[in-house]
Length: 173
Ligand SMILES: *[C@@H]1O[C@H](CO)[C@@H](O)[C@H](O)[C@H]1NC(C)=O
Ligand SMILES: *[C@@H]1O[C@H](CO)[C@@H](O)[C@H](O)[C@H]1NC(C)=O
Ligand SMILES: *[C@@H]1O[C@H](CO)[C@@H](O)[C@H](O)[C@H]1NC(C)=O
Image 1 (cartoon, rainbow, N blue to C red):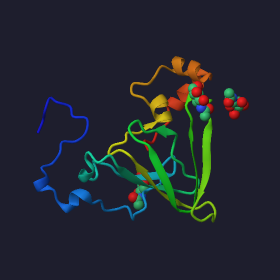
Image 2: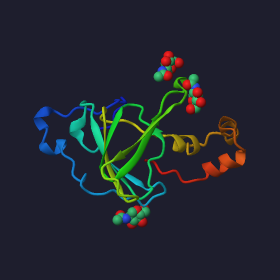
Image 3: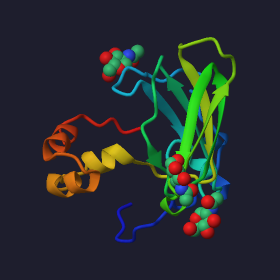
C-alpha cells in the first residue's frame, strides 16, 4: 500500500501470519558470480531477502572471491561486521579514524593456505539492513558527479586523473 510516511525499517507482519519461510533463505550453498571488475560476489541475507530478520538487528552475507578478487573499500553506516573464511586465504583489513592516524589494521585469514584460488567467506552484521558505502563508487561514481575540480584538489591529482576515474564503471559491492 502506498503511504506518505517513510518508515526507516520494515513494517512488522502480524505474528499470527508468520510462517517458516519468513525465517528461511535458500542459496548460501551456491557460489556467487564473480565475473565482474572486482572479482567478487556477495550473496546477501538482509531483511529484504529474509523478512523474519525485521527488528532483530542481525544479518549475514556469503562472499565469493575469484583468484585475486577483492571487495572494494567501503563502510557500513548501520552495522559492525565480523568475518570468517570458509575456504582458502583472504587478506582483510580496516582503517582507524583519521584522529587515530588512519592506522591500517590488517591480517591474512587462513582456512587452508593453498594458493591463489577462489575464496569463500561469511560475514555477519549487527543490523538487519546494514547499508553499504563503497568509497570509490561514492566518490567517483556519484550521480550527478562531484566536480572534478573539487576531487582533483581533495586527492591532490590532476583533473585528468579524476576524469579517468569518473569514467570507469563502478561495481556496487
Ligand atoms: C556471470 O556474469 C557474467 C557477467 O555479467 C555473465 O556473462 C555470465 O553469464 C554469468 N554467469 C553465470 C553462470 O550466470
Ligand atoms: C585515537 O585518537 C584519540 C583522539 O585523538 C586519542 O585520544 C586516542 O589516544 C587515540 N587512540 C589510539 C589507539 O591511538
Ligand atoms: C602515523 O603513521 C605514520 C605512518 O605509519 C607513522 O610514521 C607516524 O609515526 C604515526 N604518527 C603517530 C602520531 O602515531
